[in-house]
Image 1 (cartoon, helix red, strand yellow):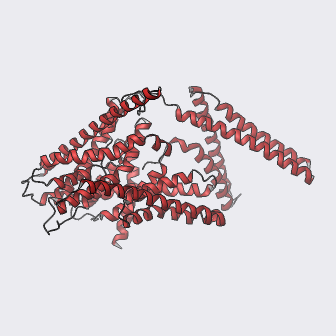
Image 2 (cartoon, rainbow, N blue to C red; image 1 turned 45 degrees about the vertical axis):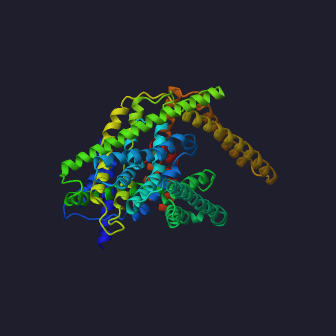
Image 3 (cartoon, rainbow, N blue to C red; image 1 turned 30 degrees about the vertical axis):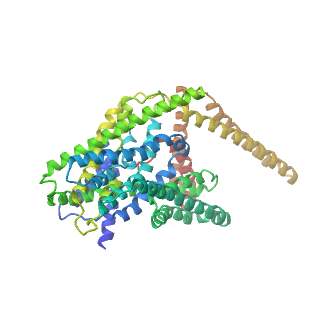
Length: 572
């Protein structure tokens, strides 16, 4: 009963945070959730939730990364794979080595392997926190895609580096060749396991379930999709591979498979609704649980005197947190600058060879500006993976002695999470304020051309369908009233699609076109809402029953959802 009450309280607080952030938009949602979690767990009479890292990774991180990977545009991932891998792999290694040595200099009595372990804990960034803060800012789209792709991939590289660092601390031995080979096996193996599992599920879904049972199994299929990230994670971990990358790989394969699923309207609508709700709940619970750990982490760090390093007080601990956080930000800035310069040099070299220089940077204008490099640096926010890794530090060494300064390491990791979250929420709006972005009309032009192509396909199909049905009417000697009505319907529909083609025929994104599209959208929304209000009035007057009301309202809801789908995405 206590567990059930705790779960209900967490869900209630999670929903409350969504309301609070509407009234206090300056505070990012993750920070509000951490604060509320800490308040609920503090003081001693508060709620207490012990976080099990392995269960935490399975129940929260695996499905969230699966959902992010399932939503991530594959074309952008392939085109930006260079910068993404440079941050997800190169920056992690750079952070582990550089910041690890810095931590060892800061705490000389701390073993070097333990310093590397702490640096590995601090290396992954948090996609949820970055999206929450940057979602309200004008971030260059390419830069945002790079940051999202980085956070998808660097969790696994950071955790693998952490695993080897802890093993070196426990055993006192480390082999670079063995670590490199093991990292390759763990990473590639995790990707393969997740991809194979997702492909097997898609084969089962399309060949067996949907082909023979149709949309009657929509709920069952959605349930199986919900279980897929857990299965991918557990299977990979059982085989000694990366469960995180397995979940990410499964999500990407599911994304690719869904692109080929033209039908299944109900399945798509219901799956999207279920995942939106699940992501919101999991994201909120993740940061609430982080807040729940704060009192115990602070008390643990203050109660355990570090004889090897010396006595310390709370302010001194905060100073360590600030110094390490600044070292992380500096190393990230240096890596972003170095990667930008190297990428630009390679692009120019390829341009000279092929005679067509290209400058693939987030702003499209060549070298990254200082403001964009600062934005990429401040967006390196640490989060839940860092906390889970810190809490998974072993309590004892192999010889039975306590693990060196475990409480201090956990406190430093938690402090860095809060420091980067606060600096990101304050610094990013300042850096990106009044940022002049080059006008990127690529996505607009793609949408315009797609709408025109869709309208042409619809007109062609209406003409063919009209021709076929007219022949059937003639053979069946259908009455003239039906034929006349059918002709009018076909003519009206083709006129509607021709109007759409004319509206989107402009070659560039002009202000007049944008105004016309917005006026059309607003007018259609007003008509749909009036239609829905009338249906409810008819039900209140007992002119229609509940079944008719639900059917008619669902049609209006679907039409309104199509018109408002591009007006904003739910926060994660």
